[in-house]
Amino acid sequence: MSIIININKLFDHRIRLGIMSILMVNEYADFNMLKELLGATDGNLASHTKALEKAEYIKIEKQFIGKKPNTRYSTTPLGKAEFKKHINALEKLIHKS
Amino acid sequence: MSDKDYLKDISEIKNLMNKSSRFISLSGLSGILAGIYALIGAAVTYYLVNSYSYGVLTLDGWIFRTVMLVLFLVAFFSVITGIFLTTRKAKKNNEKIWDTSSRRLIFNFLIPLVAGGLYILIILAQGKYGQTGGLMLIFYGLALVSASKYSIGKIKYLGFIEIVLGLIATLYPGYGFYLWVIGFGVMHIIYGSIMHFKYDTK
Image (cartoon, rainbow over all chains, first blue to last red; front, side, top):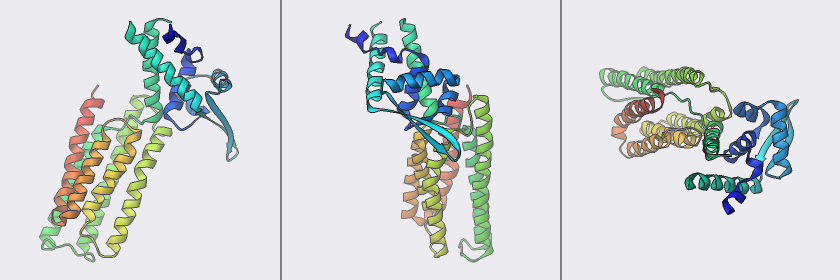
């Protein structure tokens, strides 16, 4: 049972899993980079990043590069720890079967 | 969610981690060609120095300037070939040539290379050219190691080999030329072939 508990419902979606995967290996990523890599629409991606931010798994920083607004995403230590737990749970589930 | 979905999740995670942080379209063929250019350049240099300069290279003669030009041409054509073949490969893989991962790769490659290149020019200007070959190998090796975090393949090991060859060359300046030929010529051809057959011919 304990394994099932570690499966994080918040990561149980392709886009959210993708956002976390990208942010785990990159210091930060901006909106367009996430959009291209995940092949998501603006609205779709925005709602998923908001969900992850609400759980305090990722940090959103808005800034300007010249005159263009730029949104940068990065993981929080909590997000990293939760994601690792999630991956471990996934791996255990696969090895069990 | 079934087990199959979890497996798919894991492979998706791996794929995204690689794609977002590493530039994977570096062409192996361009490594082979860069090696061949280096060998041609070395052959021309060897011929020039031995037939017109009695095996001695002086800093102010036309031979030295020609050798510098040959070096520049080798570097220039290697870069052009690399860009051309890598762009072609990236297109085939549906990958962008100029994205965050390739920018980071180039940036981290250029830091040791530019610093080393300037250093070599400075000591050349001071008339100390005995260790040029070794220094080129060392800084090129450092550039490869520094860039290796942002690409796949074992560029890191090529870098280590270049650094060791470079150190040997600075220890025995007399063999600098041959070590340069091994490092820039032979090693590129070997490494390029490995990359080509491992990643490109699929």
